[in-house]
Image (cartoon, rainbow, N blue to C red):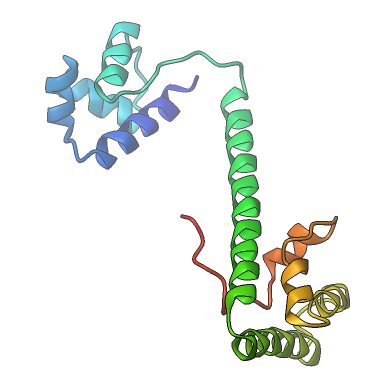
Length: 176
């Protein structure tokens, strides 16, 4: 592991927790100068005990990973974040489908007309590809009940379509 990267991580966590180098030194038993050198990446040999105490004081785990292992972990984390965003978009569209079915007919029909007008604008102003326009038109065709049902149906295009939705005006907030 590159010591400079470890130092950057320790600094980031220390600052996020509102600790000064002095406070971390008091909590870990390491010297403030040692912490400063570690955080700035000054070339120096650091004792494993010192690194371990610093990590313990910050509630971090000191671990040995295969080269590139951290990068692989970051890739996995980002994949999971994207998966969570995809699931959240599906959840939000499902909530919208329920809302459309529960609203008075005139209000639900007005919402569907608004979504259709947004797709019309996409086409008119060339804001989306013809593939998106065609597929959204198909999902927005027919009565409100059918449109609501298409919001919860999933096919190979679902996730791509939900990233660019004509329903943005009506969706519940995303989960942070």
